Image (tube, rainbow over the protein chains, first blue to last red):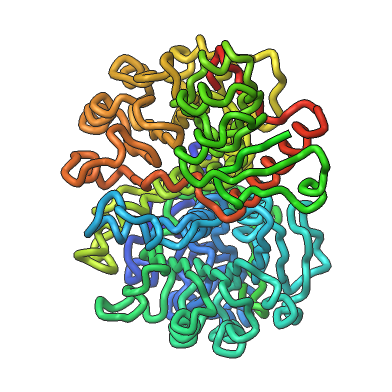
Length: 315
Length: 315
């Protein structure tokens, strides 16, 4: 059994390395990966069509990100190759989402922005009165692993949590007050004080939130996205900010990304932009290592893998 | 029965106003209050020595803040006047504290500061790797109403909560993992990744956190204060930031306050300063109104008041 790694970062522990059946090879570049592809059974972090075409024996691909846009799903499905994704970023991404919500609620971006010119304010009245999350309704669009971690945290602030998910047959934990199918979105948008857009980026979720959806929202709503740029239509968001429909936004992803220096989104005091850093955390890296090592062990021992991606649903 | 109010903000509801025994008078200024003092039984938001001296019949004072430094405790005690404080700010102040913790953990102040010159960063490496709260230890020094609300929220992030309180005989809820007496502080300081200084401002808590206490802390600790400036010694904090002992601070209160424009604290990218806004929230104002109205009702019906301040402990 031959397993291809991109770096030694996720090399398995000694016990695994000593298993007779396993041989680990490291390919630092795509060129190396294609050269070594011929006799590998599994690959960590390689999935280009050229690589897959060259890997005749390939049976499993593990990605190192949660989002799997860019993966050639049809090719994997035709070949019967199993795809697993990262799914190790729930706690740090939920922390990042809560940071956005609390900063917006407490008006901290406005305070920090004003400190550039007037440090301790002379008049209090220029900054809008801050709020609190207690009693507010949070709508999580696309309740996956990250959404569940966010819901758990938000519930402790006294928020009412409503969510959509494609598979509502799966049960949700107690801290999710209401779970609805994705088709219920139009009915839920008017009820939310806060909206966290957490769906995966697929052909169906491009522009999921556009002018029509902003029009259904409650005036003064706050919106977050840490998933992928393009799920919220950027021009529609600008119009919703200009009209006052949206009172604030927290974005870790943008469309276009990187956001150009002269893009109008930078100028809104009620928009927080972080440069796609919500997935970063030393601890997430460690959790990812544990997941990959565990999946390698499972693969070698012919056990079911964790975090299998549905190649038809594409997430 | 005559009750003195500063504004009509906290005028009681009609049912109360119609009680035969109650008469409400409004004094917009201290001058008015002293003029009207002679025959009032209770006063909302007036407690200067001059007023109390003039109010021979006074039996109860309700403050509109949680912190009661500045109240003439000895005079009230001699006169047998009951003091009640606000205590309506738990949820919004806990939200503010969690905003500080999450911003510091996710390195958001550093990101926002850098965006002034370089909007979407070209190199990721200039900003330190963000973290997450899961598994970190939070020490709450002075577990009161605000500390309990903070603990409830922090526990949902997977934090280990340890706390000190003067009266450890009172039980704490499940989300507080360990409750210790105030005297245990030196043993707890080395264990904390995060410290929230929540004690009331009294003669004993001035400079509670100084060079010696910073020296006991874990290198890389983060510290918060939303209580009152002067409980953390400002110069000791600056030294702890310079040495790297303290990795970041979130301050809603400072000493001096307002913090002068040229004060060195403004220059640290890992220090967040908000201008004493953590107590602000429309909802807190409503909760405060409910508390004051309820206490007025209790006073008129000769029932025990809520939020009685211990005039010897001075909080």
